[in-house]
Image (cartoon, rainbow, N blue to C red; front, top):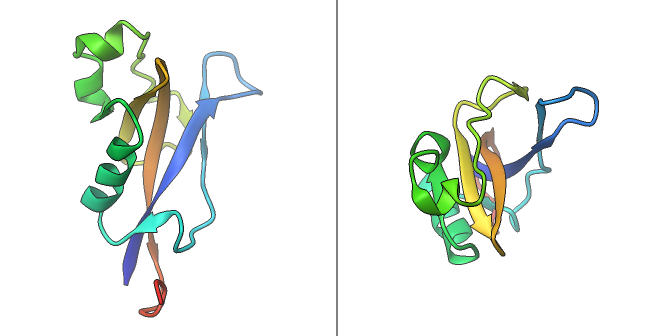
Length: 105
């Protein structure tokens, strides 16, 4: 079975102007059965979540300084997302993992 986990994207400590994809450990507490379920959960706990190509066009993200960081992320995920929490921008990707069928039991 496939599960989906949020993984943070942070500024790189090694390279100026670049970012790092921090893959999270996959476990039942931080994974969901679908991308949509994961995005809904993130949205419930934030002030908005969008795929980066849309976020860079929306005023509420632009006001907080969203940047198009695609192409500057070490181990860049296929899609980059952005959410707002406490008037700050956070970037993340989603990791797809194969797990045992009883993963959530």
